[in-house]
Length: 116
Image (tube, rainbow, N blue to C red):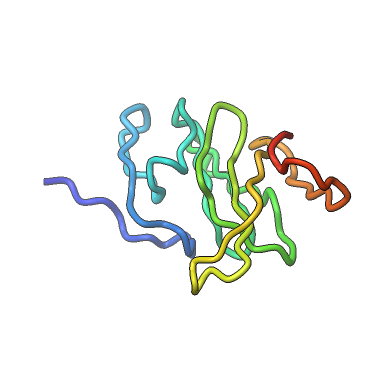
């Protein structure tokens, strides 16, 4: 039986691992945190990170005072929820942000938080 690797990324939201057939290895991310084509995965550790599976390049997409949990990774975007009190399970505001650029938060918008 093949065992997934230990989580050595420092990520705080990893609840499992996902096997990637294309690369032939385990990714230290739950399935919802892996892009549909398995070319990238995301994790939260002092910010939002996006990792290129082929090169191993770890890009910080967001580093700031707002805490997030990763909801999912779709074709070209991340779904994130703002963590207001994660110890008590309190989250608000759902964000859909580009997986390939820096994550910017526009606090002036009062309508839906969905959208790039």
